[in-house]
Image 1 (cartoon, rainbow, N blue to C red):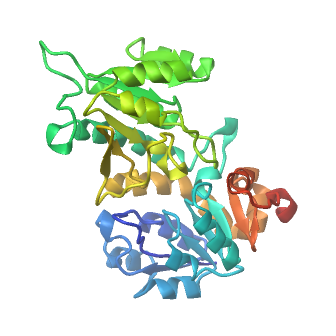
Image 2 (cartoon, rainbow, N blue to C red; image 1 turned 90 degrees about the vertical axis):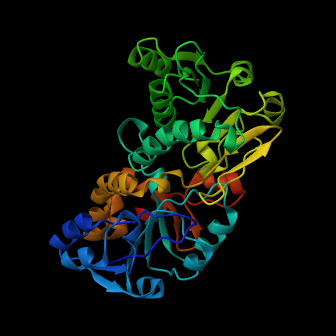
Length: 371
């Protein structure tokens, strides 16, 4: 199969869809790889490293989209990229379509087969291609929140861990999944007083045991969110409904009553955000203030640490890329129903129910297309 890797063009996005190590694996199976010049620059990988493992380097993204059967990316295609996609081509990347009807419309118009990393499933309802970036984003959330609390950044001037003789900062993490767990891990490691909310008692029991009582694990209700948010110096939103728009759990009224200079980090912003006051920002201009609360809502947080993120992502995606390349999308999905769960768009049809419900569009099941 002919596989293309374009350079990412989203604001301050430095990750790359395939590393030289991944390309070397694909070459062992006889596949042809084409990489846009400079695609690996953000992770310190020059074009020569891609040439060394057998990839062809081309000067423009147009060459990538025109010449390849499968496109492997990291972030959702920007409008100019969507317009270069075509029927019969497979796109494998993060999409986050539910809060983005404009992207959905462009992908439907293109006729492309679009498979979303974030909805590919694994055993026990896991999300194996979302997990590594959730780990990175969760750990970054505590780090970014701590930075935003600095007075020069508009925060209240609190050091999360405090020092002997002073009180540590208070952190509220809403959601006990991969993002929330990693956010709590780093915040607790900084010495903060951490409360983590989740609706699953089984998950809360597991987290309580993991943290040996050093994180306050509380059942999530609107009352609990309000109580702990009003006490918090930092609130981290880590709620996920796979493929769907995130629920708005931190209301504008609560934000209005939060402590001046407190910080809200919304890691769910890729799916529309779980704070009513959230809107997507970029690494170039990451924060804004609402009612005295600093909001950090960068939609591609892992892009800030692209070396770690790219390698972690490739470790997870490579087996699926190999399956798609070796078998074509239809047979690959017949062989792996978890990959079928990733199908969001095919030949002008929307094939993911949660996206259809979020946007009020018609839906066709992936199974009816594949089988």
